[in-house]
Structures are given as C-alpha cells and as structure tokens.
Image (cartoon, rainbow, N blue to C red):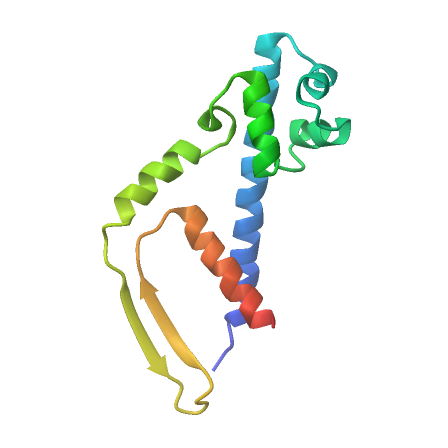
Length: 144
C-alpha cells in the first residue's frame, strides 16, 4: 500500500499558501486604489494612521496582511468598510450563513492494526477558507 499522506499534506499546504498570497495581493490592490482615490501616498497613510512605514509598505506590496487592530485603523483613516479592503469578507459571511444549516456526515473507522489511530471521514460543505484552515490544523497535528 502506498502512503499518500505526505503528498496530501504538501498539496493542501500549497493550496493554503496560494490562497493566502492571493488574499494579500488583492488586499494590496484595494489598498492602493483607496489611497489613489484620496490622492494619498504611503507616507500620507503613515501620517494619518500612525502605523509604521514598514507596516504600510508590507500591506501595499502584498507581503503581509494587517492584524485586526491595524486593519481597523486603516479602515477608519480611509473611511472604508471591511469588505472594501479585505477580499472575501462579505462573500465569506454569506457562504457561512448558507452552509451552517447543512448537517455534517461523519464516520470514524478504527484502524485494525493500530488502535491509537482512526480514519476520520467528514463530508460537509464549508467555505474554502474554513476547509483550508481545517487542513492546516490537521497537518500541524500530524507533524507533532
């Protein structure tokens, strides 16, 4: 029998990394558009928010996303709502409401050769971000 568990770990990890990179790039694009609409440069945003030049530069280049508190500062300074800057925040809320009503199908099979492990089968429609987060948790547990 071939063990594909590591291939699955790598594939789900690369999907998660790709999704995070996509969100960072889209956030950067939206931030740039909001700054241009106000006629601001990065240094203007630094002055208006009190955030560091490095923070603003990282957000504008799409290398990092702001923490929740820094996001709120950016939103206030730019006069925007969360969904104006953060990709998928409105879509995520709609998907979550839609799928929360669907029951999960769960099956646990005990491993006959090793009683310390089991095979967990879950069928549930969830937003992609939640599915990727679950894979991240499972993969981090497997590494421990």
